[in-house]
Amino acid sequence: MAGEPQDDCLFCKVVAGTIPATIVRETETTVAFRDINPQAPTHVLVIPKAHYPNAAELSVAAPELAADVLRETRAVAEEDKLDSYRVVFNTGSGAGQTVFHAHAHVLGGRGMQWPPG
Ligand code: 5GP
Ligand code: ZN
Image (tube, rainbow, N blue to C red; front, side):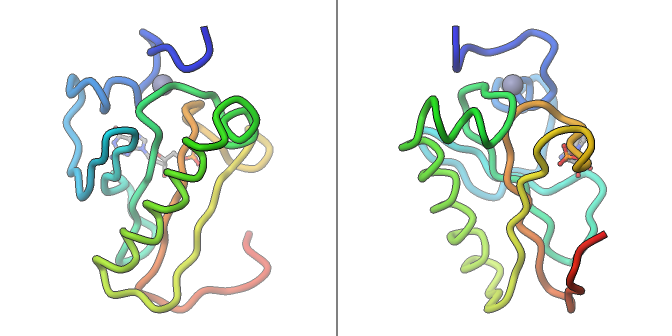
């Protein structure tokens, strides 16, 4: 069923606490934790606790939960005192998605180029 935990999903394991992570924020519906391979001084992943394979599916199946994730990206940026930052939802392997549990990257603390690679 949509939203159910998946046995083979890394981020469902972070939510369950069976894989350790440096958690920076947690709400009833979301978890925010530091990326294991940071690409900027702040590189935090914000995930819904419920499993959806990507942001596109999350936005359609659970729009209020998608809003929770987006709200948490702002909270992470505020906590790290970022006035400029980038929020990225890689969607599909061709766009660089490697973990198929919806997540927002919050990147900041350095200059950013556009267009991204
Ligand atoms: P994607 O490439 O799917 O957009 O992002 C997945 C992110 O998860 C990558 O930036 C990667 O470094 C991060 N990541 C992969 N495995 C782990 C892990 O075990 N712990 C943490 N904290 N981050 C992870
Ligand atoms: Zn999952």
